[in-house]
Length: 138
Image (cartoon, rainbow, N blue to C red):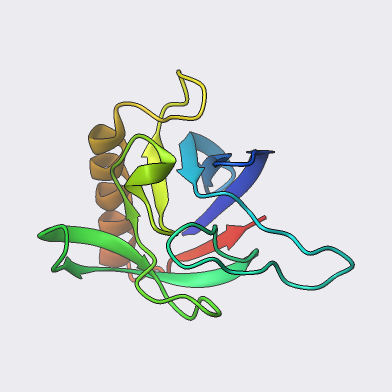
């Protein structure tokens, strides 16, 4: 399974994106602001309020002690640990993780819990077929 997160609106306080599964639109995303230095150099990180770098990362579903539920976890993200895809509505609900939902209000996603549930179910079904799960962030 290939997840693709395409960032479509990079604002001062948040980043809105679209998540696709195997090239099919799935839902919207919200992340903290992206801090791009430019000229091909990676962005600077501000702890707890920076979107992860663009790249391709393996994804697993593991139990989150913080959220007390099974959630997708991105592996091998440079300069970041514990990057999950989870529920939330605004940039203040994430410290670098990816929130999923519907971007029906400016700077927010709504119906997030529903979309997390649908994503975990899709990933679980792919894993039951022995598929590897990857996400490309662009």
